[in-house]
Length: 188
Ligand code: ZN
Image (cartoon, rainbow, N blue to C red; front, side, top):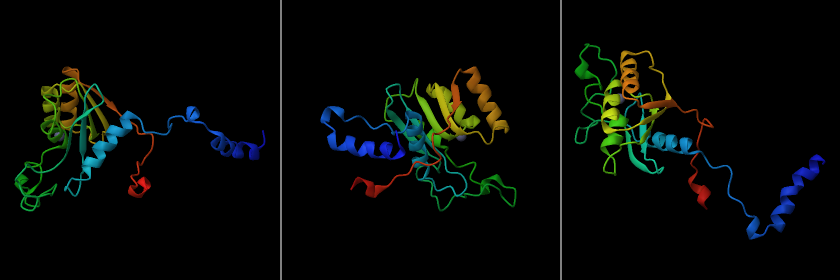
C-alpha cells in the first residue's frame, strides 16, 4: 500500500460509515490517570505557595467518595496564618507546619460515603507519617502516589513502616502523558 493510499483510507471510511460501524473512542484516559488528574485538579485550589497537593478517594466501584487539598482548617484564615516553610527566628509557630491540614486528611474528612474502608487514595505526594496514621485508621487499603521526593525523610520512612505493618498497599503511578489539558471551548 502506498503512503497516499493509507492517508486517504479514513476519509473513504467516514463517508461510508453506518451506525453499526461507529466504535467507541480509544483515546480516553485510564482510570489511574483520571483519578490522579482529579487529585491534581483539586490541588489547584490550594493556597500554599510552595506545595500544592490534592487527594482523591475512590471506592471499589470506581466511584469518587472524597476529594481534598492541603490548606488551613475551616475558619482559620489564610491571611492570618503563616505559609512559610522556615522561620528566621526558628519559631515553628511562624511556619505553616503546625497549622496546615494535608490533602489526604481533608479527602478522608470530606468523604460523602459512610466510610472509606477498602478504598484507594490517589495523591500527588507519598503520604507523610501523620497522614499514614489516618489512612490506616480509616480503612483505606491502597495508596496510589505520583512523587516520592521526600522518600528518605524520617516522616516518609515512618509512613512506609506503618503502611507495611498495616498491609496498606502503595504503588507509584506513572501517568501516560505529562499533561492532561482541559479545553473549555472544545464543547462547542
Ligand atoms: Zn500528610
